[in-house]
Image 1: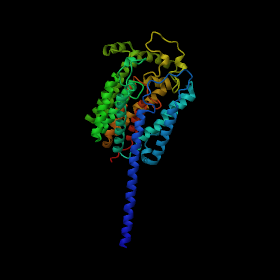
Image 2 (image 1 turned 120 degrees about the vertical axis):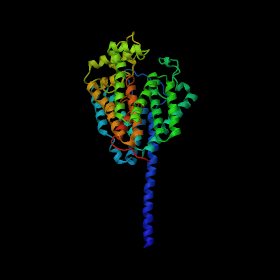
Image 3 (image 1 turned 30 degrees about the vertical axis):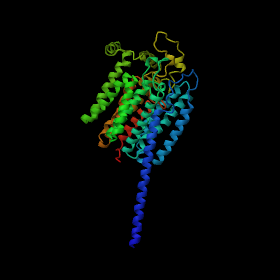
Image 4 (image 1 turned 30 degrees about the horizontal axis):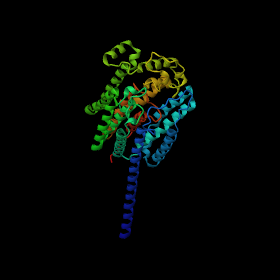
Length: 443
């Protein structure tokens, strides 16, 4: 009897150990996949490619590498989430918000000049979001996510800094061509310093998160290398926005009042909006801007914004459709303005996320999409920060959200396929939504 009882007891212990070992392996695999996914999202599938070639009107903008690569990666992450992620976590991803956002984009395609190309771009954006979700939900606990994120950033930094030594012409702006004015500025693996600087700012933020999570030497190294890159990028606006975003979130940490930090953020958003797009709409604001900064045109962006505002006024309700304005006959059909510092016909975006949202979706659709992407997550931040276990993680996502809200005044990124600016911003929005619904798990 005792032997039988002993055998049964041993079997129970073996089964429990087996289950624990299986869970451990699943957690390790989930963290590895999460880190790999984040690394690819930041790197893109075509790094160090330089400035993309402009396409002629009517020419396909499809990219077979992106289409096949992201489809395959999306499939891998979908299978991994279904097999490894915890069901209660998947159930709290907040699909309703994203259904509305993608629904707005899908409805806008009815206005598109090339609906097939627009649908293809939107489908790619949706597939990439599967990878973004996988990065967040595959780790079994917060330590697993922190380790994955910091390791992904270290891998990216080591690759880019190695390229600075081995092939600097691929990661530093040259003196030739239209971007010769940026000669010597670091652009890293992306097409322009203005895209690279926000990405490496977010890398530095992940380093701060890693430091706070106990990964001291790795987190510190990521902070140092990330900030060094931003300083060498020559992107003055990002150099200003980075400490602002960190400072706003630090205000919540010091005071314990995230609502106060959100209020400070809203005030800064209003100020930055007034000094950017507002300056082309109001002579008084323009005069104020000239007294504050040396280049009140933001390197000629003011002319792009004026053009965008005119086009919005022509189709305010429904816009021009997803990915169906810039570099299409809606723009290229205009005659060149030789007095302007930019040839509008070759511009790839409006260099303002909010104007481009109105151009794409119409003003009502843009207001709703921007609220869901940049307004509602602030309430998620306030709610989730009340949970002590969530604070380090949600502070990271809030820093990214706040930084990209400011960057959106000068660059366009929402729903922009696999653009690293978009996917890192989407990760923060999705992460805040998830954290507002559940606690992070300690290892």
